[in-house]
Amino acid sequence: MADELLSPERGREKPQGGPPGAAQPFSHLGVPHAGQYRRLLRIFARARERFIVHLRPEDVAAELRAEADDQLTEALDQLVRWGNLRADVDTSRVTTVEDFHRKRSLYQLTAEGQAAEQAIAFYEEAIGRRGQLQSVALADIADRLRALLTLAAESDPDPAKVHLLLLSVAERFSSLADNAQAFMSALRRAIDFSDGDVAGFIAYKERLIDYINRFIADLANSGARITVLLTELEAAGHERLLAVAARREAADAVLEGADAAASLARAEEQALDRWRNRWRGLDDWFTSRDAGHPSQARLLRQAAVTAIKQLIDAVGLLNDRRSGRSDRSADFAALARWFAEAPDDAAAHRLWRAAFGLSPARHLSVTGDTADAWENVPAGTPWGEAPPIRISPQLRRTGSYERRGKPNQVTDRSAARELLRRQAEQEAAQTAEARRRLRTNGPTLLSDVDVLDPRAFRLFLSLLGDALAARAPGDTEVKTVTSDGSLEVRLRLVPDGGTAAIKTEDGVLTGPEHVIEITDLVP
Image 1: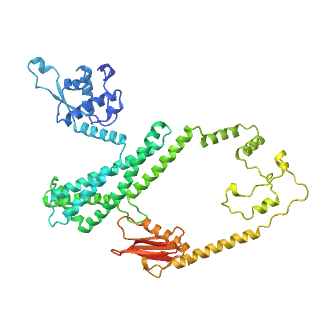
Image 2: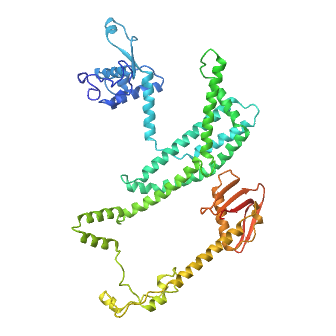
Image 3: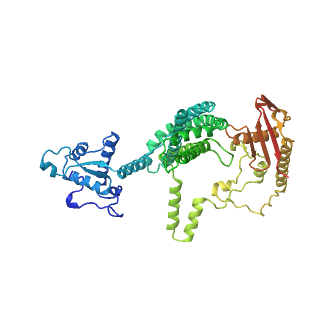
């Protein structure tokens, strides 16, 4: 122990700051041999978990697999001075006068030392937590809420069952939220693979993507069920269940003051406020209020999908680096160094032209026949099917071409511009006509929508898709506006409305019956 713990000749460690005699149980973290002090305190913490209160120096030495010497006793006494431990006189083994005068102590954790150990353990757990996406927790929350819904239907629910179910929901939800946050933080650190194991990252990315995909599917399914259960519980009177749990908790509270009834009512109100706050957090996590305030579950799904895209991009970049392809950032850094090392402006200009190729391509002149052949070639024509480029043999032979005589006249593009203008006006008129045809005179059933031409039908499908995408789980009505702000769509599900059929020139679109209202916002 002489090499591990403080020796007497090194002097006693003094607490930093604070009044004389004040407990400073964190002082051992900033002194030499802090790791050895942590080992001693962990021994006392584990002993307390086994319901062992007092330890003798030889008990500590047995845990350390060392001898109980003076250095160990000095270290324990130093922890006593810091306030982590308390020393009591050990008189259980006194049989002679010499034993009575010999110092023997029993050591135990103080309240301050126990609190410090709990704080350090919580910090280490939070820092080292990798996190996980708990699909099982989603199913557990749904099961507990379903059981609470059954109890809510009873006139006099069992307080113990209600309290235990709410505690279980709060514990599972807290674990789900904390682990999801830790997992997404760890995932973002894993994506930043610059200092990591490249081979290991590529090897486990497939399993990670499958894992995230499964959780996204479970979150979408279980999240919708939980949202419906929360709505049904609120309709059934969840406040009554929260009040039952608060009343049961307040029964164990220590009553203060002379008026016991007022103290009990105050404790019950405080417990009810805590349960309301927990319920609000659970509701906000799964239920979207409107488009501007999505639920945390929806945000988590979006973050998981974004993480998958980032993983795929990261793997692609890794493969590019491993295959020897040039790195754009490294290329630009090398180019910047070349510019900095250029001897003069002329050299820098030559480097610019060579690097970016922005010199005019005047030598690529074509004949009039080639220009005429290109006049009516669609933009999407493959190169193999397009008319060939006919160039001068002199250009092919010498690399430069100088045509003698007067230059060609500037081509008149006014006809082509007029054609583009007419096409744009025609498309705008067709789009306006499609909007006019889709505009409804008040709420209308989907089955009453008139036969639509292809352009109007494509616009109608876009509007229907935007409305369905904006509808939150469990909602039956939604209102949204198109991205260009020209149309407003209101969509409401018709309960037991059957199936609606919309006839188009391309076929018949079928789906659940809805009431739709489309308003043209363009004046």
